[in-house]
Image (cartoon, rainbow, N blue to C red):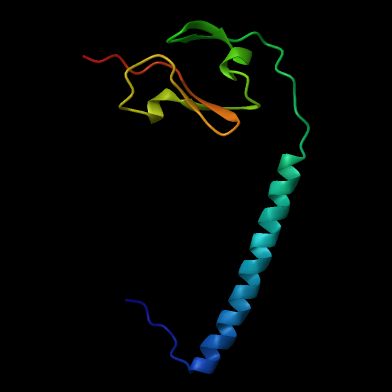
Length: 105
């Protein structure tokens, strides 16, 4: 077991105060990076993608199902899923599981 310095309550409070200031700065920097990321320009998708779904073949645009956002997740992340594409409606988004499950033997 590693040895730790033993100090007074006042020493701990002062060290904790310095640490909290560093944590707040890290949070502010992370928030600023997130704002900058959200301001990145969008890029048009020019390739014509098609997907086999439970409702038949659909284009990428059709996967949005009239919503402003699409979240695509690899199907292997959902090991209990039975196959094809499955959608879950979000607030103003659409979640799609993309791909096919591994063959079962």
